[in-house]
Length: 254
Ligand code: PGA
Figure 1 (cartoon, rainbow, N blue to C red):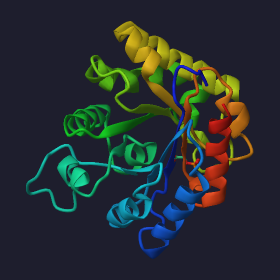
Figure 2: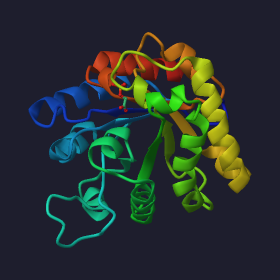
Figure 3: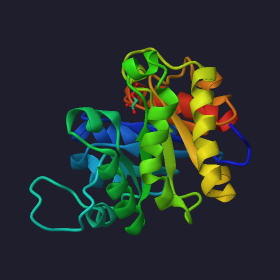
Figure 4: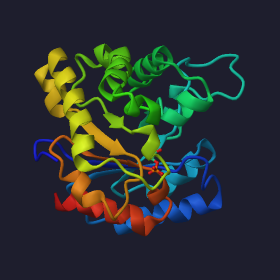
């Protein structure tokens, strides 16, 4: 981490805790992170729990994000949720381009860019995800793949330093218990920041680049110590308030 940037710890609940247990989990996170004044904490429940979780964390440090968004404001798009709808329920963040959406729901680099633009126009703060597959890493293509994914949306950010965050999530590390090492993560984070610097120094200095992929209380300290890692996007370990708060605590310690 770098003291110039405030760390951000976000929990991606995926398709878990969409009902009554969501309020319990969110309230637990709010309670356990109440004294953490040096870190931004975001939880991203499923759509069905967004309104309840916004209510549960009201008055706390915790902010709420969605896990996806449709770029259109309204219309005949059965099953979809738009940026203004997220605004309406009090959501301030949204995860865009998660690898599970790219892999299972055909999201493309272009689609990710459209969603990022639409979310920002609606005043939402995107957490845009990038990351290579295992075979891409094995072929030595990690940096070129991530650069391609980044180039698809980075120009949208030009005059928006501090717009939100970028999450580097190596796909082989997601949900596998196999995290990238701090040096592996740092290499990619540094490349992302260098690319942002080509757009503007403010964008590079202010953008928080999160690491995601089996981030847990066990490895948070060493990963967050990497100079270009500004926080984390956490799946599995965000489903227990204690584990998630312990990662946030590492970020709070700096
Ligand atoms: P994980 O998921 O922490 O369970 O690996 C991270 C993510 O998919 O955002």
